[in-house]
Image (cartoon, rainbow, N blue to C red; front, side, top):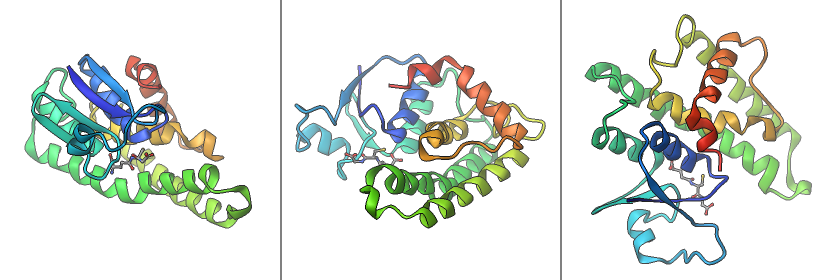
Amino acid sequence: MIKLYCFPRSGNSREVKLALFEKNIPFEPVNTHAPDFNKEDVEFKKASPKGKVPAIIDGDVYMSEAFEINQYLDKKYPAPSLSPQDDAAAAKIREWVGINDKRFVLKIGLLVIECLLKPKDQQKEETKQKLRAEISDVLKEMDTMLEGREYLFGDYSLADISVTPHIAALPILGTSIPAELKNVTAWFARIQARPSFKQSAS
Ligand SMILES: N[C@@H](CCC(=O)N[C@@H](CS)C(=O)NCC(=O)O)C(=O)O
């Protein structure tokens, strides 16, 4: 069975859990934040040289990085597919995920640091507002992309998965999907209605 190194509040880990639940692939979660987990564990380090989660062991495959893992899972366990069959369309998704990992998911990560991880007296309201505005700008672009579409690239795909856990975290970061973004609001309601959303929550 696939071993998934993760911890409950890790958004990146949840990306992989979403793909696993969508595909109905059984897996054994290993909580790397559990008090008895040894961060120097040789198998974990082999799967994740940087010591980050998510990481998987699937037979003789050792791998880290959420999107890399999800692409691997989608090839190895093709049903239901989470990528278009057309190579150019699949490449567009890879490009979009790569770009938004840096300008969107990273910004949400920085907001997590600013709002939740820094001691209160070191948090800067100005930094929080700047990050929230940058996140909102990308959500606006997504709203345009979603015009006339159910999901970001038509069918539900690895692109939707790549941002789901991070958007789900916005309310604990003092922000949310702006109400005027009707397409993003409807899209995220569709995502939340998928069984994988609840199944991957912990
Ligand atoms: N680019 C990586 C980011 C992985 C990452 O930053 N993971 C965080 C958790 S979401 C982590 O392992 N942090 C170290 C820790 O909390 O122990 C990915 O997409 O998987």
